[in-house]
Length: 491
Image 1: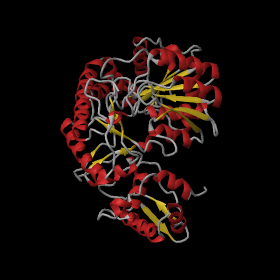
Image 2 (image 1 turned 45 degrees about the vertical axis):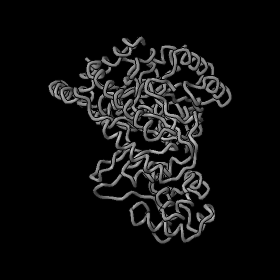
Image 3 (image 1 turned 90 degrees about the horizontal axis):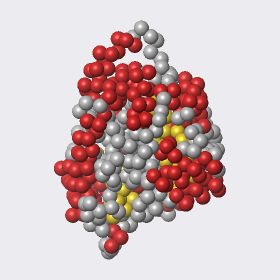
Image 4 (image 1 turned 180 degrees about the vertical axis):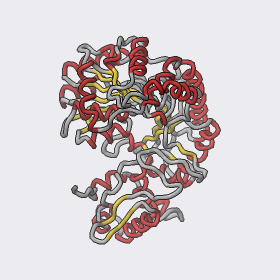
């Protein structure tokens, strides 16, 4: 297999505004520390994958406009931290440190005892009913033990429960239109493998879910980003134009409490986009991972209600945000032909979702609203407490209030998201910078802040972020566009 590498120009684009000469000359971090921190964050956030060869020291120094000593010292620091491994003749390759306290990649951060507040993973602990659901699943497991345990489509109990749930939401569905997967991400990867091939274009919201971008690029497809408007909603005209002009094979959308912005797509916009996709012969993959987290009211009927052909829209969902990420249960809802095709290619990836997880999910769906009401109330309080704390400590940051989901999407007064991420870690807060949610290094002016931690932790985190932001010495005069909206306003 050919070794992977990243060119100096590509790495420079990924690094963005890493350099702060004023801070380096005022007794703050020298340039080599800033450069090492910036490269380390690219690795930890998954923007530069593991085991990728970095450019040579001289080449990178020229591209960055710094001395070779700066790059050499930064690489040495990364090697000491375990984020770079150098071997004679093979260059320096990205890595992560082993052992206790090591962080994972891709925006998910492992628990450790450092005392840092982790706002990198937008995820909640298990819902109260999860333990009881597993207990009930264990009681029902003996009925499945005489079989071989491989269920490419999923156990009948869960497929029926999911079909009934879609039907209750206004989208008539049969069990034959459901395939159970090991999470929503697994569902999307399966759909990509079935319906797209190398070189195909995939239209995406911009910003969007980072691991969707990862899946698209790893399938050798090309993401076609369509930006979200500055204030609210979707650029439907832009989506229609992209469908006409670029001929994407797929479109990946998050209309229900979009990650990371929390936006909710209006029913009329869903109808227009579904119609335009059908005319362009583009399959729309709708990610409903956040659909249960409506904090100011429920979402409209499922996007697939507006499918004019019955086969244009494929819906994926999962339990990670609604109940618990540890369940790793997801699903695809589509026409029967697509479900059959997915079942046919699935053995190339896995042989089915664990039976116990499926039975526990079916148990949770029997009375899902009881637990979800409590979960939504908790998230709404945390959202409002986080918004209020930002208004107190960082009034120049522009916060888009989310009607649902589990995070705020924040516009900063300057393109310092990556630099702020490094500064925040020194103050004991872990966040994911805006470019992780975009294509080509976009969104350096943005930051995602989940409100999944306890309210007191969120308020403490904002105070630490304010100190980290002050360290950057960003010179800006707060104006009307950068005021935090008061709780209750829609921005």
